[in-house]
Every structure is written in structure tokens, then in C-alpha cells.
Length: 98
Image 1 (spheres, helix red, strand yellow):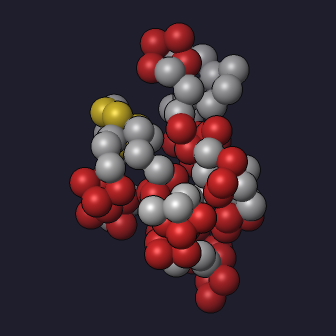
Image 2 (cartoon, one colour; image 1 turned 180 degrees about the horizontal axis):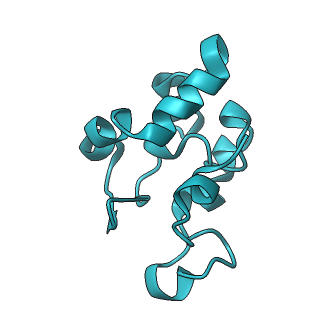
């Protein structure tokens, strides 16, 4: 099970090649989501984390990025791999206290 930064190769994980330029991705450090969908921190639930990158741009709030995330190949792959055990967006948001 790979995390978003491993699949998308954004370089924003701690120690990644683009952190000086773009900063560390909040999904890579979001400990409240650790283990969700078998990921490290928010690495397999990045669609619920504000400040992740998509299409070369840093994305904002969950509500603002949800449509593009639902169309994302990584999101679809995680849902497929996890099957019936894929954590719902509501459950993930609850972990975040939202």
C-alpha cells in the first residue's frame, strides 16, 4: 500500500526534494489520520487534508477540493484497494475533528 507522495511523486514528504520550494505536505504529517486506509499519516486519505497539491497547485479546504479529489486516480485506487474497508470521508473528517 503506497502513500500519495509515493504515487504522485510530488516531493513534499519530509525530506522530499521539493520541500524547500513548496513546503512539507500536510497529508504527510497529519498524524490524526495515521493508519487510515493503511496509510502513513494522511498518505492514503489526502483528499480530506487541506493544503495538499493537485495539478501543480496547492489545494484549499476539503469542501473546495472534494470534486477534483473524487475524480483523482489515486483516490479511486485507494477505494478499490481497500474495498468495503475504505474509510468514509465522514469517518476521516471525524478523525480530524471536523
